[in-house]
Length: 399
Image (cartoon, rainbow, N blue to C red):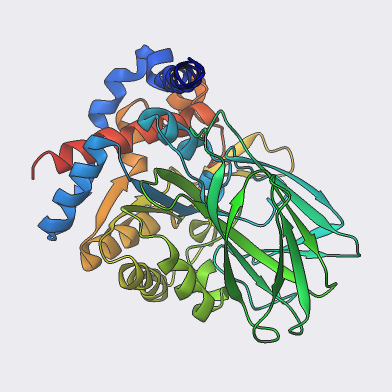
């Protein structure tokens, strides 16, 4: 009888979780359903095998892994949050920053930290050896610790045991970190080489605590996933960065990290901050963006890659911030991103066109879908998520 009760309890938990996920943005705001017909994904891909493969995964919502790189449009976790609501059965984390920088968030986990500080790759000349994502946590004094707790409202799992890969480096090969999981199992991590980024693999039951044993240890992030059948929707966004931010990341560890999890869909949403300058060096922009895409292709060869052009790049003029103007390089950036998508035979979602076709930037601002500047509101990012999802389904249904 106990066996039946336990299974019924688990089933009820899963049903409740799935029910909560069905209340996505469009279900709560049906007045925007007609907007989605204006969302368009331009498909320059000729890899029919990959398209059919991802179509099957997207239809089944099984073992589907999505990663989103980008700037402030991504850093708030709003669009990726809505992707999770649409799909409804996310059961793994994917990659996480070691700690979230100020004004950034992830809804997948809860962090608690003591005596750790953050470096990130936006900062000029302070550090030049970042791992993927460009965020580092380091102790300013000992004792120092980070607690990680998975958010059960975002991750559907009653089994809290995960494969956990920790990205770190230390100044020597002595004890660097002590990891303790919820079963009180403890693991000591030592660097194999001094001052070299490496990835250590453990099986841990969450929540976990990471203790610094060296004042020189640096954490570069965590991969958290199941042994099989992972549904992952993660984001690596940093406020204010351009599309060439990856040039500040250590290429050796970046390639190692890109191989840890094979992603089915990789979305890149850069360009807004590239358009903040009056002059665009188009050749350099295209070259650097293309190199990053080639790295992604090399290490995730079975992925669909989607570029997103930025929404209208509007910024305030004058001290009052009551007047706004559009960047003079916005349209050239948008055209350059289109060229990259065509050259690389990947996909393109035209965010500006989606907004223009559904009432303009001002119209979105009046509906609380957009702010007056370049940013959208959380509601706007959620609507964009539906636009991408539905237009991707339309493209894949052709195969």
